[in-house]
Image 1 (cartoon, rainbow, N blue to C red):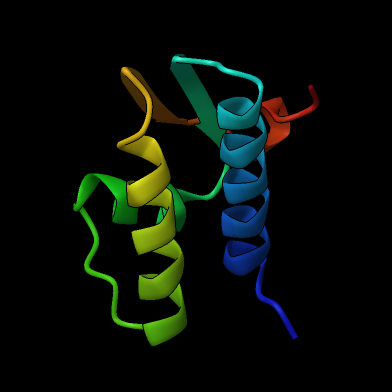
Image 2: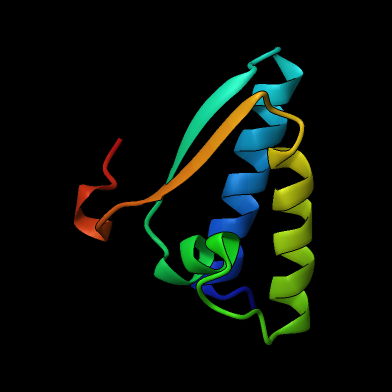
Length: 80
């Protein structure tokens, strides 16, 4: 089964693809997974091969925006 972090990556990837598809150029993404946010910034190493694959997809998508930011938010604040 998918871990919470895999689900977080899946949601992030889907959101980024959607944003690119409708022509968004600048994006500020919010993520409540400490692991995902820290892997993206390079603060945490990616030891799991599947997480590494997700991270590569996110970085590739992020590179297609003029401006991209990923911000970690507390899980309790993620109600939007």
